[in-house]
Image 1 (cartoon, rainbow, N blue to C red):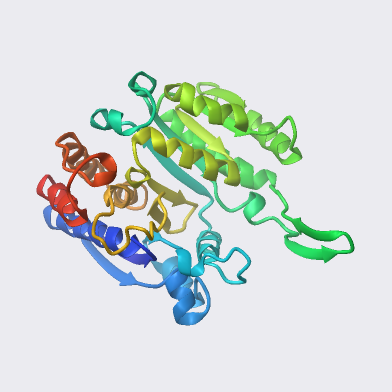
Image 2 (cartoon, rainbow, N blue to C red):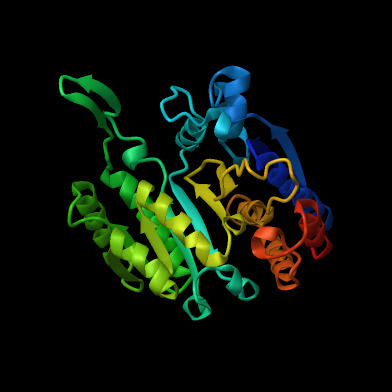
Length: 352
């Protein structure tokens, strides 16, 4: 297998964890006969400093022509003015839209060796193994009109939560497809008691569910879902939800695994390169110290092998190596270990 991968290390700890992931990919390619070719581009705050925008047309074109894209993280205190016209997060939104990746997959599984790293009681974590499918290119983050204005009585801000049936149906179909290979349960999360967009969401969920009678479909309001993620997390198999709800719920779910540094993600579309990234941010407080947890990014490359390259054996081999490292306690400080980023990466490579 031969593939072209665009690297977008980004800001903060992004370059450190992406570098670790590339080391692991290269080690795996030597053992399995793969050939990966990398090109690196700027995104986020570093792109703003270099070119005045968070994502250039040239970078987006390179990503569109690649076989897959690996992203680190964006943002930091230097670019943290919410009222700024150009912000690092704009690069992420433009990249997702430009690639047409409409479904963000975030698996959440609790490793037995990390039960004590979670703030939840151990008995709540038994059997937790879920995947959250977040719609990625619609909703509040993209709806129009959007903006702020000064009125005669003060200031006014508007964000529009907008969805079409097509946008909902395609992400719903992906959720049911994933559930078919798992425990055959889909939980659709909405706010249909209040929002018109959620009523359309639920209508489409029912239609897609009717076409998959072998899969159990449940509807849960987002506030109830946020509670159940803490009280009964093992009751979930596949969760599918809209953009903002998914953004919030997946960060909440990250505490189940013990650290945000643990969790990978894959953003997928149809006939487009997949976008792979850890769910954590740029962590500017530890950037440059060599102590960032690389596991979320490394596991994101396992998702890349699985979904973009259809290399299930390689993905499983990489995940098994990570699992062995965690079991051995060879982890960074956020997981209660003593190793730095490089040492954790070395341990994973040694177990490939």
